Image (cartoon, rainbow, N blue to C red):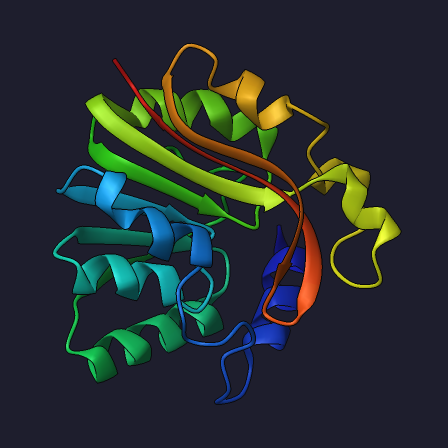
Length: 190
């Protein structure tokens, strides 16, 4: 959508990375559980997770609606001596290639109609790592409030009930100096 693209380009404008340059903590803590190979980073933004994957030997496709975010991702990758492939696309119309990825990562983004594509995009033995906000976030002082973009309790677990769950967490966690209501999963396609 044009409005979403403009909104995110505006947010990512400037030299400072909106969410910092350090990868998501759930990813950092669990990278050892993920199979090596090709990864798709959904809603990659400014690329902090994409670059982390690349630094750990993955071949990375980073997809995002924001051209400004992806330019920062390329810059961040260059500074780290890493290589990522950026795909400028609206996830509402983008189609994930079937049976193409060893890992699909999704952080701080919820588009429920992508779940089936994520499952189909993974190779057998591939893993999804997915973490985003819960509906409990509405009671906290910051973060998203739109219920369309917030998970219900156990919803993320239900999305991947046909996968082998390696790690699951759900609750309110203190991270980066603030509280976040989140659910996170790592699960493999068997």
